[in-house]
Length: 350
Image (tube, rainbow, N blue to C red; front, top):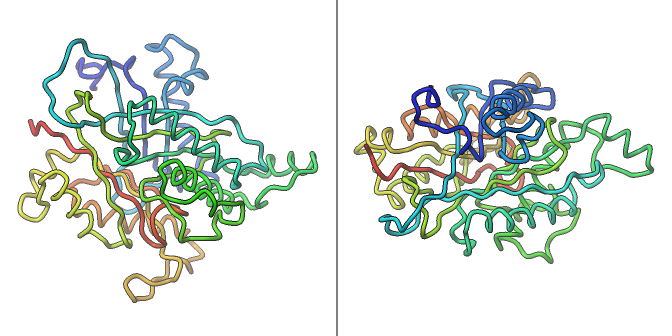
């Protein structure tokens, strides 16, 4: 509809972040199908083959829209404008980079950490961000280990970090998040080694969001931040939820960064808030503010799905809408049981 109305030039699309309505687990092919659909759609305006679209547009699909979360896409465009602008201060910018393809035995280990850190730095350069404090959210799409990948490594005499496909998603997300933390100076390089991935929860990034999927063999990195000279009508800010019910922290972010009061003027928040991007996980100690939760003990529904539903509802109560990017599995992404949250806000409320 936006393209038909002339409000969106598909040739200017540089990134798409989507929430798809699968289960968000290993066998969630809605991510792959969404990526395929976007690749075929964008091939025409980009004048390339569908399989080449991913080299020019960052396609990041996160599965799982449990609870009130709505399936949706957030589309990022970029264009160069002539002459000086009238915007004062910093505005939203975006940068993209890709790592090299990973061998199965590299996933979840320092090779992935270090490659991700290099990609974050490259994406910052692409965005025109010079200071790491101007980075507010780093989205990484990372691979997982299938049985075929594990067996191919074994055939070469290599050993993967795990043979369990679902467990590999956590290792891949964790290594990617630590790569972000390394690039942004949130952790000391000397503290990082293979054993730290999923082994030291005290090491984390307050700005990383990693989603694992079956549809790729490398990391795609999207850096969202602010820079002087951008003429975007949007700004971005971030915070870290201390736990799954930390709505107050998100309200403080909106108030202090954007002068939006979710309590006194929810209609204004609904008009100006474009999206919230958040990570969610079930607290590994089995408690939320001292009360026991059962998300980790449910044999029918994975804990990541419970967490997405819970955090999605909390954030929707603040945002006033449900098309929110809430991703499960927050290994090294925020403190245990919590997670990073970023808000993109329209500065022109019209």
